Length: 84
Image 1 (spheres, rainbow, N blue to C red):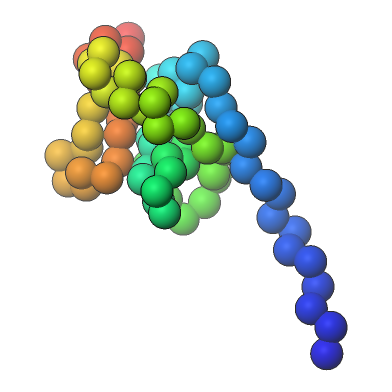
Image 2: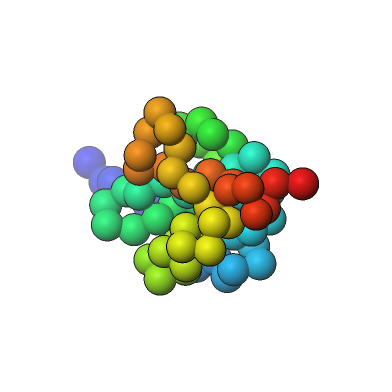
């Protein structure tokens, strides 16, 4: 039996501007397997957008533009400096 290739596309690396837009739109960053994955919504089961470099995630958290979610410490959501 032959195995079919996956239909899932490879995730692209996101820049700072795109990550900020994701967070402003209610998305989140989730630490999975040693990297940060950006999601469009707080539901981690679907809508993956791309990969965020560790240095960028750390910088966003240090600047206050992203904060750890109180219920899940492996998630970063929009911080007070990004909220409208």
